[in-house]
Image 1 (cartoon, rainbow, N blue to C red):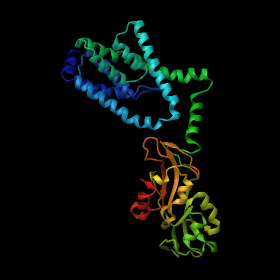
Image 2: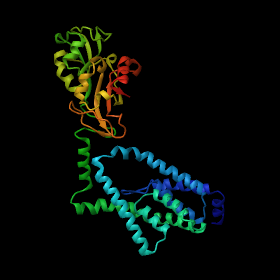
Image 3: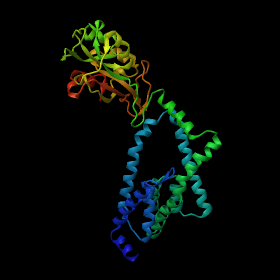
Length: 391
């Protein structure tokens, strides 16, 4: 082991990156419902490698710890501020109780068993599965004014305490939540999760990966027009309360230019796109549904946008719909609604509100535009960008 110790002493970066490589490899293994993870795996491997003697420069330690804290804040910070509100008071109180009770428990047990400051901090980090405590404790120990050897010893004990307690900190929580608490509370995590999901979705339907509705909200159908369809495109769309749009018209095998004033004739083939209920309702009145030819195909483009115009904040979507001109919202269908990342049931009475994270951001709306290419949308997209919607 002498050659290995000499190598790592001369090139400590080898030990650093070796800990990351082996730690993330070990962290990928899953034992039932338990998985160590890359962070804990790297720390445990680093504890083992450090036994042969590895010294990392304090400047490197501080830099990497700062990067770690920044990454954690960058990932969880926006979610934290978006969740603030009356509904999160219970969660905040629980987090405060957990932090205080965990600190008291560590201090009391450290006094009872004679643990030094390094081991106590490591036990807190592993027992609470909070890796950030390691860096915080190591930094605090270095500022206690102790001898260099004592500081190094205590900082090493932080990692040792973490390595000893992390397994139970993770696995023990699983045992308590899955086996003990359901027996005490007379209900399972699955029951509470399903109840919370139902409250969060508020009636909205959310599909998982690779799932699609068998009856989609937005559909396209081709009809051979009969006598009831002999009217202008504008009149036909108005009869369906603007819930459908005529996207393509074929007459005697030739595609015609679609304009609101184009008068349809019996025998024309028209592609109707819109909400399923509206298309099904007006279909028999228009004509007979037929199989589409390849030139009648159409691509729908979906985009997420946010309603930011102050004139539309605090108004229901029924009011917003009535205030927007027909030419501006032609070919555009609002399919779903989300606020602060959570789905919201979409109906005429739903009120548009400013988001919690930024006052100028409201709902995120998923909409579909019945055009093949975005550059072809012309004034529709320009009007949306300058008026109601901001992509």
